[in-house]
Amino acid sequence: MKTIIEPFKIKSVEPIHFTTEDERVGILAVAGYNPFLIHAEDVLIDLLTDSGTAAMSAKQWAGMMEGDESYAGARSFFRFEKAVKDLTGFRHVIPTHQGRAAEKILFSLMGGHGKFIPNNTHFDTTRANVEFSGAEAVDLPTSEGLQTALVADFKGNIDVEKLDAFIRDKGAGSIPLCMLTVTNNSGGGQPVSMKNIRETKEVLKKYNIPLILDACRFAENAFFIKLREDGYAQKTPKEIAQEMFSYADGCTMSAKKDAIVNMGGFIALNDDELSIKARNLLIMTEGFPTYGGLAGRDLEAIAQGLTEVLDEHYLTYRIRSVQYLGEKISQAGVPILQPPGGHAIYLDAKRFLPQIPADQYPGQAIVCELYKAGGIRSVEIGSVMFGKYGENGKLISPPMELVRLAIPRRVYTQSHIDYVVECILEVFARRNSINGYRITYEAPQLRHFTAKFEPL
Ligand code: F0G
Image (cartoon, rainbow, N blue to C red):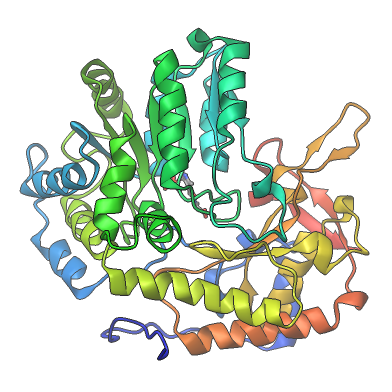
C-alpha cells in the first residue's frame, strides 16, 4: 500500500517560532513548569489539545464570509440546524458557545443532589458540571479499558453489566440520564462499539432512562467502527454516525473537535419539554436560540465542518496520522496506551519513568522534558489532573499516569510528527536521569490549569 497522504493542499500558512533549548529551560521555569502557563508563541509543536486548534478549509472560510449575523432567525442558523438534524436525527438543535456550555444547560436541568450520572468515562468539564449540579458522576469503563498495554478494538466501551447492576442498586429514579463519551477521551481516545451503544440503550430502555451521547469525536468513533466492527466495512462513516445517534435521545457536542472549527458547540434533544427548558436557560446565559453564544459565521463553519469530517479520505488520514506517531515510538520501546486512539497518543508515564512515584508526578516530568527537548507542548493526565488528597493529606492517585499528545486536525504534516518522534526518543533514551516534581502552588479546583511546580 502507498503512503497515506494529507488529503489537502496548504493554502495559508502560519510561521512557528523556534527557540533554543537554553531559552526553553528559562521559559519553563518562569511558567512554574506548567505547560498551560507557557505563551503559545514559545511552543514549536503544540499538542496540548485537539480542541479548537484545527485548520479550517477554504469552504469553511468562505462560509465565514457568508455568515448571516441577524439576531433572530439568521439564515446561517437554519443551515447549521439542517446539518445537525441530518446527521443526528434529533428534533431540537440548540447552539452553544462550546461543549461545556451544553453540559451546563443539560445538568442544570437534569442533575441535582441525590442523582447519579453514569458514563463510560466523564471528561473533566462534564464531571465538573455534573458535580456542580450536586449530582455524582460515575465512570463505568470496562476492565479492558484500564489496561494500558492491552490491544483491543473497543476499549472505550461502558461496562453494560455494571451499568445494569448500578441502576438496580441506586434505583432508576435517581438516574436522570446515562452518557456515552465517543470516543472515550479520558480513557485514551478509545472508541465505543456500535454493539456497546446498542446494548447500553437496551439496558436503559428497561428503566426508561435516556441515553445522551457526548459526541465531540463522533466521526473518529464512527470510522473505528467501520474499520473494526463486523458488518460495517461497507457502510459510509455518515451512515455509521447516523446509526450511533439513532440509539440516543440526545447529545452534547463540542464542535471544536469533530466539526473542525475553532469555537462552537450544541445540545440536541428529542424531548420537547426538556428542549423548551433548555432554550429558556440558553437565553439567560448564551443567547437567543438561533445563535446561542455564536456568530452566524461560526454556525456556517460548523455546518460545513460536519460534512467534511465524514469524508473517508479525511478520516483515513486522521486515524492513520495518530497511529503513525504511536507506531514509531512504541516500536522503539516507548510505553504508550495501546492501541493508538482517534485524536491522541497517550504515553504511559508509570512505565516510562518507573523510578518516579505518583506523588512526584512522573507525567509532569515527561511533559517538561518534551518541552525542553523540542518545544513540544503536551499535557499530563494523571495525578496532577485528577489527584485528590485523603484525610491524612496523602495524595490519592487515579489508576493511570498518562501524558497526552493530542493532534490538532489538519494542522501538522508528517515531518512535524517525525520531529515529535525524534524528541520523544531522545527523552526516552535519558529516562533514567529524569527526576520528579513537587507542587508549590495549587488552586482548590481543576488545579492542573494553574498549578506551579519545582523540580526535585
Ligand atoms: N467532552 C469531551 C469528551 C471533551 O473532550 C471536551 C473537551 C468537552 C466535552 C468539553 O468541550 O472544550 O468545547 O467545552 N475537551 C478538550 C480536550 C478541552 O482537550 O480534550 P469544550
